[in-house]
Length: 89
Image (cartoon, rainbow, N blue to C red):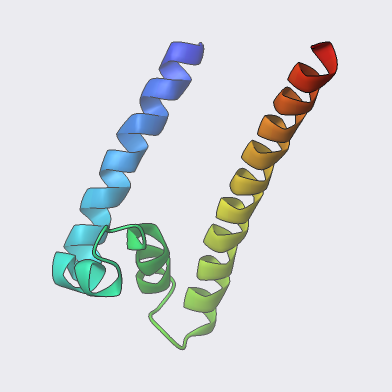
């Protein structure tokens, strides 16, 4: 099961990246951030109705909340692992 879930996650990132390039435009994604890290938030704005619309703002907020929760979970896991390592030594 885990290999299928991880594989589908990686395939979804490819689909989201190409979708952002097709709908938002690769020039707009590069103009927002040269590394392309804002492709998914820009895609959320576009799919929600564009900048300034309620749907775009709500969908952008959902994407931002998911990203924040993911970062928070990773930091918590690293902190827990490092504290266990320090306590064990």
